Length: 441
Image (cartoon, rainbow, N blue to C red; front, side, top):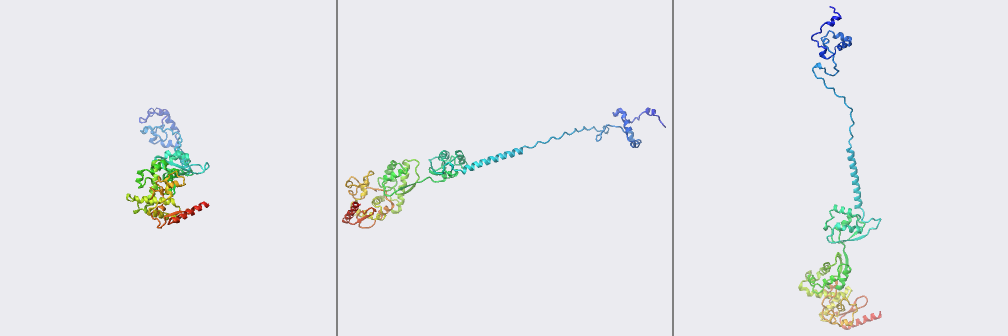
């Protein structure tokens, strides 16, 4: 049955269909969408139930509709443009720091190398030379460093102290031995330290010739700056000192053994240092003469008389002849005279008794002086003691004198040798010949 448009409009709507007010969709939208639908969709969907119930929505593709029973999702905000990530700067700082450390280490290493290998005095300023450094007892490197700088042995005091601290030598008193040390200004700091710690102090060479009287030995030692003469004089006459060394006389005359000594020059001259030096000479006497004594050692109290005889006789032989081959013969002459109870009549003993002021010219009045205990022209036997310190050769000659019958001798001439005689007539003839030679010069 055909219905008119008016009828269609007045036909009530299907009670089951939702009203536009309920869906919230304008009524005109449905017509418009129906009108805009493609012809084939209109024909194909007109007869389907879905077509009859279809309602337009504002649902966008990919969004859920409220009709699906789910709440609409909140739309995601549009993503903001990505900001560039900050560059990491700490590797650059670390690299720069490491470079600074390397530069600092390199600079410090170069300074250390330069100091350790440079001499105390720049060769361009002054040539290298030896200097003496005096180390007093208790001196440390800290107190000694200014002196090393002053002498030109060390160039930089602060760096030298740092080196000493690294070597643990800075404040150690026992690291330094007292004495005088020779150091070269061309040495490196380590060579200077090694010399002061491990080197030997300077030893001075002092020679005591044979035949010197005690005061001549004392003056020679004083000139070598080993003793003060007044300390030496007091010591060689000190009974306690003489007793300690087993010397059976009132002085150390005869026991100041002639030799060449290497002695460390004392830093301070006093009685103690003099005792050390003089003790060195006397100890050398006993060691060198040990084979001459019974048992090869210093005689005890029972051997004092033999010590007196041998040393005194040896001292006379020492002053009478300088010809080595004559020493046992001269010793034999005096041994014979002693055996025959003859006066020794030795000029050197009389001259010794005149003391330190003797001018070397022995006169008749000296030979007639009975007040001189050493005048063997007036006093029989050996003099009271030695008249000098004899050498080992004369001590051996006195211990083993030559066996002969000579009881006189006189100088032959300028060569220092002598003419030996067994009787007075032959001796007087040799004396006349001697004076004739002297007058003929």
